[in-house]
Each structure stands twice: as C-alpha cells, then as structure tokens.
Image 1 (cartoon, helix red, strand yellow):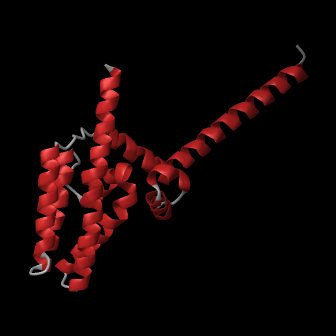
Image 2 (tube, one colour):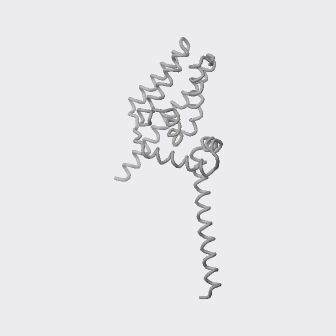
Length: 191
C-alpha cells in the first residue's frame, strides 16, 4: 500500500472518529436538555461553559443513581395527602406556621422516598434528576421562606410559597408513585 493510500485511510478514520465523538456529544446534550428541561438552562446560565454544565448534570445523574429511592405504600401516600390538606386548612389562621409545616412535610416526604435531607442545594441538585419540571417551584418556595425568616415576606408571598410547595409535594407524591410502579414492573420482568 502506498503512503498516499495509508494517509488517506488514516484521514478517513479520523474523520469518522471525530464525527462519532461529535454525534455522541450532541445526543447527550439533547438527552440532558430533554431530561432536565428548565434546570438544564439554569445550570448552563450559572456555569462558565456548556461542557462544565453538562458534566455537572451527568454527575447529578450518577449521584442520584446511587440513592436507594423507596416506593411509598398506598397508606403512607394517603397519610401524606391528609397531612397536606390539614396544613393548607391551617394557612387561613396561621400562614407563617403553615408554610413552615409545608416545608417540613416536603422534607419528610423526600426522606421517606430516600432523598437526602441535609443541605438545600444538595436536595435541589438530586431532585433535579427526576423532578426537574417542578424544581423551580421548590426554589421559589425556599426563597420565600428565607425572605420570611428575615421578615421580608407578606401574607401573599406566603400563599405563593404554599402553592409552590404543593406543586413539588404533589410531584413527589404522585410522580414518585408512577416511577415506583415502573421500577417494580421492570424488576418483576427481570425475574
């Protein structure tokens, strides 16, 4: 084989490898954007560059995969739903207490499912893997709670916080139940 032919083959192989690598990155970007939704854009905006942001999201997925998420028993799910209704009813007479209880109930639900409950940023990071579409609600509710702690939140702000907490609460309660059923189905199918 001549030197020109060898160089030609090497160039073709390098072009194919480069195209495969580029395709892999583009497919991963599309997958991350689809999975994380608004959290993808938020992470991108807070990062120095796209590659670093995407690495962070992949790391979140890795850490999330190590969690031992547990399904909620139907009775437990019903108890949480009743507790949420009770907290909402208390809002009329004691909005500050109701918001604090809502935050605790959401945290308790996270713990019950197997999410870590120490450190708000870590919670948000791990929730973003399966609950990215409702995570902004949690961020807003948390921000209002912090403003309330500083004496800067009105009753209307607290009402808004309750709505935001409810959105994440319902996602954790119902979306988690759907995923738990999917996990059980896959586990039973693997047997």
